[in-house]
Amino acid sequence: MKNKRRFAMVSVAVIVVALLLEAGILKYVNDANAYRLSKVLLDRVVTVLNKNDQSEEELIESLKDDYIVRAKAVSYIVDAKPQVENDVEELQKIAKLMSVDEIHLFDETGCITSGSVPKYFGYSFDSGTQMSYFKPMLTDKSLTMCQDVTPNTSEGKAMMYAITWNEAGTMMVQVGLKPQRLLDELKQNEISTVVSDMPVYKGMELYVADADTELVKGATDCDKIGKNFHDLGLPTDIKESDKPTVRQISVNDSGCRCVIRRGDKYIVAVTIDKSFYMTNSVVALLVVGIYLILASCCIMYMFSKIMKEKYEKEKLLYISNTDALTGCLNRHAYETDINKLDLKKEWIYISLDLNSLKHINDTYGHDVGDEMICAAAACMMASFGEFGKVYRIGGDEFVVIVTQKPDELDTMTKHFDSSVAEWRGKIVNSMTISYGCVRSLEEDWELVHDIEKEADRRMYASKARYYSDSGIDRRK
Image 1 (spheres, helix red, strand yellow):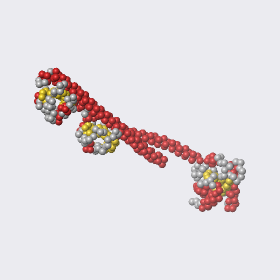
Image 2 (image 1 turned 135 degrees about the vertical axis):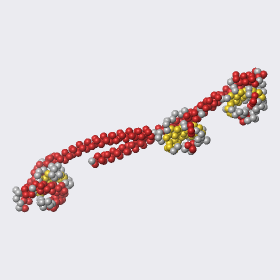
Image 3 (image 1 turned 180 degrees about the vertical axis):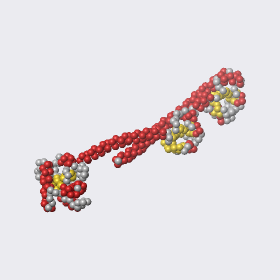
Image 4 (image 1 turned 90 degrees about the vertical axis):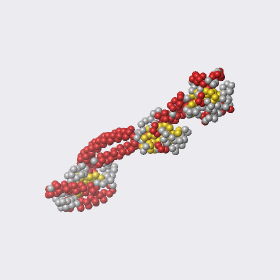
């Protein structure tokens, strides 16, 4: 029972340790996977943003070249047909032909004198910031210029303007276009669009903020756009680096793991809610826990079965080798052990026999005789048991084989004599035991049986002296 309880406690301890170890391993693996996943997502976002910035610049440059070509084409047409210079309708037809929205003709002072949009007549390079962009044209007639998408001076609408001098250098020809294609593509490449197109798992959030203002320009949760990183609980003390930084933060009162990277233009952050791997981890722990419990139950069952078989074997062995009355080893054990004794080693053979047991049995009954036999065995065990084995080989016949500390035989026998002399039974007040001792090395014995016979002889000699000295009839 104790072994079962001990095994159960050990099993529980092993299961707890195993589950804790697995939880630790799962946390490590999950954190590593989360980091790798976040890093891949960060790198992808940064790559797309950089590519978009590059493609926007390339797109703007290609449009500028195209618009300058159109401005020069209009200049050639006006030079070829001077009569259209002040003809608004003709200039409008040319604008339609060249697929531009506006045509403006400037004089050498930078003032609009003609064009397809009469309401702009009289505006000059001094009329506003947008128009002043072209002032370098006044001092260098070899220039051709194209402006980025800018709100125009008159109406504030987004336009791109390209300007060139005519062949004679007497006027500047400007074309204006609504950059719808550019605006459409730029809108497609806006950070908010880029981020919203990024694939993320449930429990993950992606944020892209301006590196200077730290305002969110794109997020998987559109409600976060325009908010400050600090207000969202995202870290703002991250230094510019190519490597991401990992922080444990709280977003909306929920614990998160944040992988963040600051670049020269953007701050990109990925947050992973602590419940991201929770379900899988719980399931894994549950599966392993159930497996360990079932395994422990099977092992416990097998262990219990083995222990039971071992106990039965030991019990059978004990019964087969133990005297039921005294608890000493029996004749069977004696016969087994006696054949294992080595005559070249030192040991002591003691033959013992109770005196007057037949008289006690006849006078007081076998119960009293059995009490004396048990008492005799107890005295033998107390005196010799520490140094050897005690056997009951017959009714009142005992054998002690001393294999440990044979030099202390005198001490053992004195203790034995004292124990026997002090014994008092319920009915009989005393008992005596005759014994004979033989040392294995006191002669050159041929057989162990010779030692056995000599010990019996000495024991019977002692018994004879007892009866002679006590005057008791040995036959009784």
